Length: 161
Image (tube, rainbow, N blue to C red; front, side, top):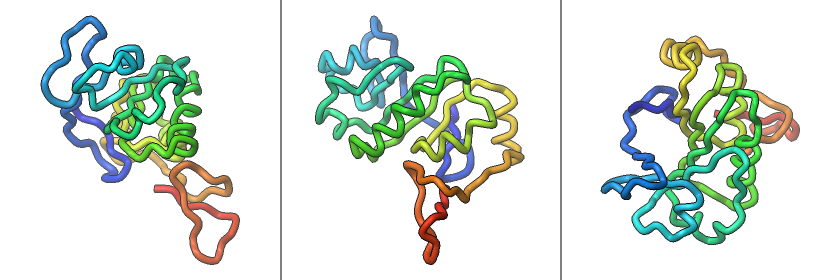
């Protein structure tokens, strides 16, 4: 499977496994649901959150999580954006943050600004635009984002990757 990596600006191979809750935990990099993670599933290095999940009950466990995958059930559902910002800004999460599911090309910049690192998406048009490099990116903003910095000399302008 390949995911789009914002930092590289390209697709890359990925070796994360997302087992169902009733499946045994495979060897390697496994990301599990919040219910399974909170039940202290040993060996899980990743966490999968769906729209409607909260960060309650995770406590200090986020420090050992290498990947948080936020599922987008529909392109119109904005709850994963809020979870991403809370993970980055309030909880100080520094690991990989991945958007999974139904994401449209118009949302890619917003995902980057909310703090996402990678995309595992299903929309064919968005995948095609990312592969072809035809997606128009806006990297200068007036509002701060989870992943933005101030260029020297401008107190009001931000730049994102």
